[in-house]
Figure 1: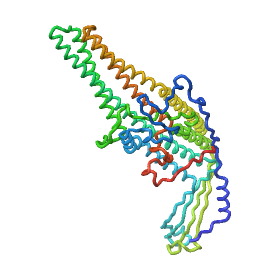
Figure 2: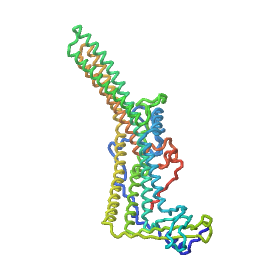
Figure 3: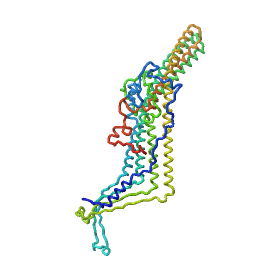
Figure 4: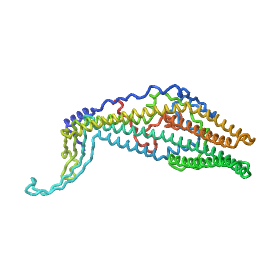
Length: 512
């Protein structure tokens, strides 16, 4: 069937299409970063370490930015690498974040479709009885068959639908960046939890060694007391050291078990028995010399900042939709096809039919709802500006804290190593003096207690140093790629299973 449209109708539709597309969105301008042009300098910030480690091991970042260093290159521990890989596959929070991106993608496609005409194919048959005195043909029954198409289209003169499309796109891109931030955070959380478990294992080893010495000391004092050589004071002091070490052993045993439970939750499954052997806490060899760069570079490195900016773009587009609601809405509806009293005549040229019904709707009175909706949209934009600026300030603070810690932990650990060695030697000398009758047993017990505390402090500092390096790596935007040199992945297409058939969507609001 060939349908011929009136030339005037075609010209009107073309004119309306050309007029459509006007936008009342405010011109988008990125807010100025509410932080300094450089990270803090001086004092602890001047003592940034190179590739050297206080433990005598070294691996260098070779001047690469954190975002360009794959997490498999940042972490040297093969067991940790395997656990991070499992977490990226199985973590439920990350899976929900992926699905949120897919839902936002579908919502954007729904909104984008509103800009195009809706075309529906129609076919119907109508059987009607008319009284004889009202029938012009003298027949009581008539049948009409119709086949055709129905077209409806809202002409977006003032950009209301286009603004809603831009809002949906920005929301989709914001969720995609949020999903990227969630993956980077997951890599960091798994690593810190794994290091915490190693730290508690070291604390257990220190406590067991101290408990073994305390138990032997208690046995000797009990024997001496029974033979009238030692006093009850010596016995009770030895008993106190033993009980203190026993309590610490239970506490660290509990912490170690809970560490593994937390790690299993992050990974999303039980840890496999065939994981590769891991490295001790002291041998992790994390990269310590990643350059911090400039605060302005965080705008490109940090997905949470990018997500906040896309949310701001969405609020900006929503203002355009709220403004357009004050103006008339124009829609076109048309039906084109054939009508015939018989099915055989449906496709004859003489049976063509069409109808064209343009409609305009002008807001006259809404009780102030339109004005309130515009005010709400403007307030929401100011909220998003504050959130965007807060995201930048938070990122600046996290990097600054990481740099301050990185500049002090190495020297702190070196001092604690020397302190632990001095307390170990002190215990040896105190024990010699006690055995030679120069000092009482109280000096030995005090030396044991101080050595135990020094060893605990050293393990805690090593753990804090390693956790800070991981946190700083994340704060600088690291953790998105697995291996250095890989091309950056599209945040909106991070999961190959979910996004293999989905179109790649690009921002359309850059100029707004």
